[in-house]
Length: 116
Image (cartoon, rainbow, N blue to C red; front, side):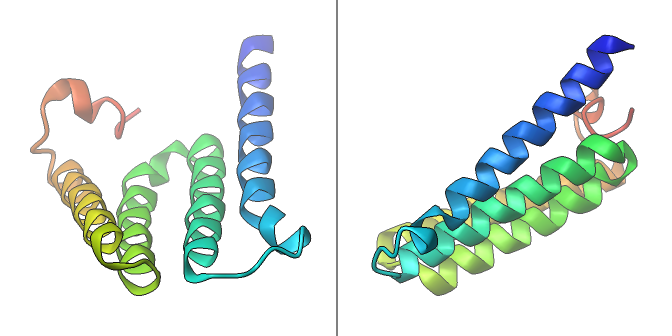
């Protein structure tokens, strides 16, 4: 029981660390560029998704799907040419994995991450 509580506490700390990293450039009054905005959006959304998955494991597939959409759209809209295509590819791969998890077409070793 203590291990589960410690795991969740460490997970909350990691999520808070990601959120702080996301908003730190704004607090330091650094120049706000599209790269900073894209990084902040992606870090904060990963932290929120991590906390949702940690406290409600049944939502793993849906959160994974929407994270793929956010990574693809934020990367495509806010980043420059070579990087935006990389983020779109990563986002599409995450979306495909989430859809295959919904359809239960992934190998059993990967499906155990989505069905607990």
